[in-house]
Length: 209
Image 1: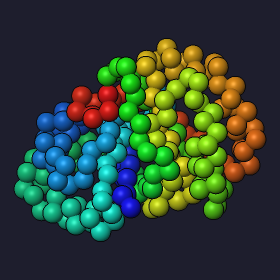
Image 2 (image 1 turned 60 degrees about the horizontal axis):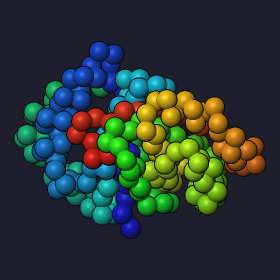
Image 3 (image 1 turned 180 degrees about the horizontal axis):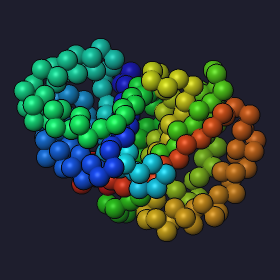
């Protein structure tokens, strides 16, 4: 079973441009696909400004641990990236996740706007809510669901969903027309504690644009 890893970093105000430069020019070239496969790399635009979201895939938990150890030993990673990027960062969050749906690549444009939903469920209810979200498709008429995951480590009892819109206007229009999403939450909201939503833009080096 592959493991997907969502890393969320809070960057100091004023540090985002330099962080993205270091990520695109140093981190991603050094890592390639030898230390986990990069699925997407975004930065917060609305809801979580100064935050960076990057999604990696590993063959399994043991493979992740092994490649992380090898990566940490690389001088190019340690000296050219970590030493320069850590002073820019205020907080790090990591979620190890299992995919509930295969990742879908948005069609028709390379300049989408993305949304991450972090859905904290009641204890033990994440799998049930994720299955309902997968089977009901409450956003299907207005948005592409890139993927749905449940967390294995990091923050437990959480469902993560990434959505794609063709532009900001489409996201705002979707918000005004989300009767099915609101009806879905009205039916199943007893499974949920809270929902955090962030609107994101893809970094230039993100495989998903």
